[in-house]
Image (tube, rainbow, N blue to C red; front, side, top):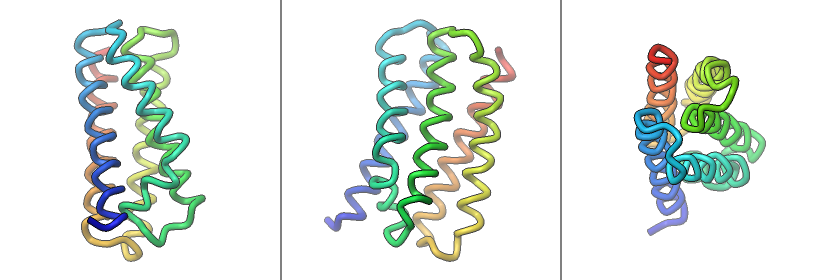
Length: 140
């Protein structure tokens, strides 16, 4: 397996863990395991997003990939606020809608530089985060 395929799988697994933890955390608030899982996912994206996103965009500039990791991390941190019932949770989720939209716009802007699979993966992940943030904000 090539390095980019391995990184792509790792990034997809981390994303799935984060989305499942966010959904279950919203349904079962104050669950410590889900909270720690979301915090872990957020920290992984923040610290190593510039590296693991090379699985989707191997020729990507590290600053662009860091920004993508920051946006993902911020959305998952907003979901962490929801699972812990911290103050400002509603505000963080409202801002995460903007972060997800920024991520989708960025991916759409650089789509010609991405592989077809990388573009679809990033676009779908951004759309899932956007829909989930809207749904959570609606039910808060």
